[in-house]
Amino acid sequence: MQKPEHHIFICTSSRPNGQQKGFCHSKEGVEVMMRFMEEIEERELGGEIFINNTGCFGICEKGPIVVVYPDNVWYGSVTPDDVEEIMDEHIEGGNVVERLLI
Amino acid sequence: MQKPEHHIFICTSSRPNGQQKGFCHSKEGVEVMMRFMEEIEERELGGEIFINNTGCFGICEKGPIVVVYPDNVWYGSVTPDDVEEIMDEHIEGGNVVERLLI
Image 1 (tube, rainbow over the protein chains, first blue to last red):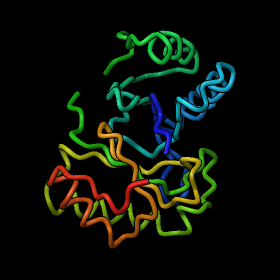
Image 2 (cartoon, rainbow over the protein chains, first blue to last red; image 1 turned 90 degrees about the vertical axis):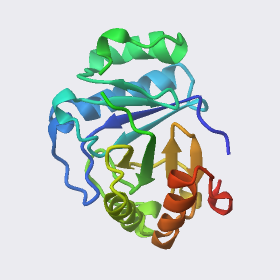
Image 3 (cartoon, rainbow over the protein chains, first blue to last red; image 1 turned 60 degrees about the horizontal axis):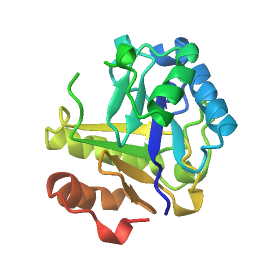
Image 4 (cartoon, each protein chain N blue to C red; image 1 turned 135 degrees about the vertical axis):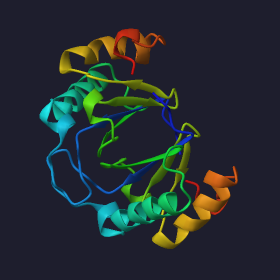
């Protein structure tokens, strides 16, 4: 199969039992994911950039969490307004967004 | 923060709206995740090996899907009985489990 160039994981506090609560969920984790999906569609990067919502990463105090693999870059306190910068600087530009690193 | 040596993502078909259905969910994706959690706890690898449930990877016909990063190794049709082999061979042994690759 075609593997992604970048694979973006966003905590939306999705629990395996379907329960939907938690810090990242309360802090717009779902909105952050939706914004990434829009940006990827607009930039026509769907074949190279994959995106997934996840359950808890266990570092809720730093949430909402966004992890980019295989880069192994961890961002915290990500807001919907940060998504465009992550896309421009990191995903398309190749430079991590230092101010959001955890 | 301490980054994981291996980060294991398992599709449990967790949708961002809390809805809980889909191929990986129906094919024991949650049970696969639980088995990984038990193995990691028993082997006392919690500090080095992270684990997360996810939403859909979009390749449902190959599910249940397990992805290991930063290795960028993709496994498909994973059953709960495959988990011990993935832990022994790949996570602790350093060799991918060829028969499960997609």
